[in-house]
Structure formats: C-alpha cells, structure tokens
View 1 (cartoon, rainbow, N blue to C red):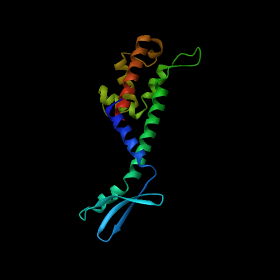
View 2: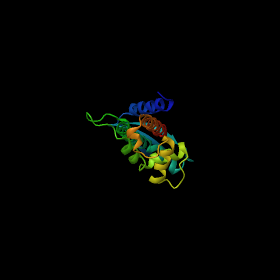
View 3: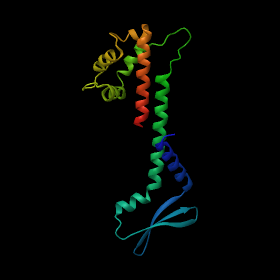
Length: 174
C-alpha cells in the first residue's frame, strides 16, 4: 500500500471516529468557540483567539462537512477509475470472436485523457487531435495502419503494453 493510500486510510479512520457529530459555532461574550453536539450533549472542541479571522473560523467549523464531501468525491473517483480500467484492460471476448485492437486504438485516440498521456509520455504535439494521436500510435507501434493490430501479434503486444502503461499513468495521476 502506498504512503498516500495509508494516509487516506488514516484520514477515513479519524473521520469515522468523530461519529455523527455536529459542530456548532458558539459565542459567549467575547469568546468564540466550537461545540460538538451529539444528541443532547455539547462539548467545547476549540476556542478561537480574538485575532482569528472569520474565514479561519468558518473553515474550522465546516471541516467535518468538507472532509465528508472530499472523501465521497475520492470514493467516486476511485470507483470510476476502476470501471474505466476494467473496461479497457478486459481482453475476454465472446467465444470465437477475436479482440478488435484496431477499434480499441481508434476509440482511445478520441479520449482526452489518452491524448494527454501521449503528450506527456510520448511527445504528442499540440493541438491534441484524434488524427495526431493516430499518427503517434502508428509511429509508436511501428505500424502503417491500426488494422495491423488485429493481424500482427507483435504489434498487438506493443498495443497491449501501451495500454498497460496508460492505465498505470492514469492510476498514478489520481
């Protein structure tokens, strides 16, 4: 498990330890503080200096809601990445029907993320267009037509390797 994954796990555990708590901004005379309310019980969590700005206080008070939102967004992004990874790495076809690598390559050349991958990793020049991506693929895979991916096992292997690199690049970018 990566260091970032371990930190994310710790953040989830710390957030879960708070339970269903509501943080409220409270003032008592000149003192401003945050109370945590669980049911009828209220506990002072933090007191603010009179020099604390309203933005600092607001950020602190709303931290649990923001962490909850960010964790849900991370979960959605991870789920979407896994769905994309499963659909692009899956090579199983119905019985008797070979994988159409040429079609896969054509679709990839239309994906904005794949174009950025080709730009960052393989020097695809701007503007990032489908045509430029197709030309870059032909060059990288040492083919004259994407159709060769369906007929030349070495070219197909180079394509699968490029797809693996692309998936690793996408995962590293999250």
